[in-house]
Image 1 (cartoon, rainbow, N blue to C red):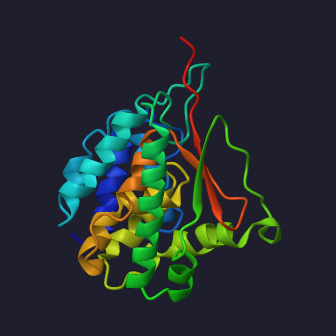
Image 2: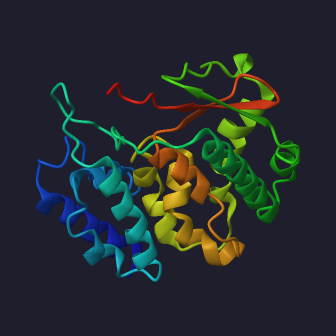
Length: 242
């Protein structure tokens, strides 16, 4: 299916879903890719008839499987105190042990290194060659510095280089570029975006799901922060009081 026809089918599906899915939705006056920002929100809470459009792509079944998992994890977008979530948030995640969190963080970082090597980004691959320490904490994480000059070099590698790695994969199905903004705005999370879109990149890289461990962390409500040159902090959600 051509990207033009795919875009049209997505817009039709969103329109059919109606305003109940989300306030955001495809906006025809924007560029084709930007017009699909909010597309996945319109199909909440269960993804609707997503498969009818995505299964026209060679990677469709794998893409749908991943997306359906996100819909299941995030559930209804209704907030406990009223209003609706603009993005997909796992509000009641299963608990992850400290040991499991450390393991998945290590696997995620190694996966990023593998992607960097495949796309020829030696700077990023070298920066991740020496694995940072993983520190596991609980609670609400502090915010990263907004200004680049206040960030550690390691944080800059993650935010400025790692988040662009999949965009460097060559000879990718053009539907990937079309859907990239919509995938990003699922949770404003480039790592989640790239995991969900991995079926587009798998054949070209020959890597097997290098970002699966990041998805495991996200699914359990774990967030990462980097304030030092040699350490990644993971923040696990606090267990609710019984």
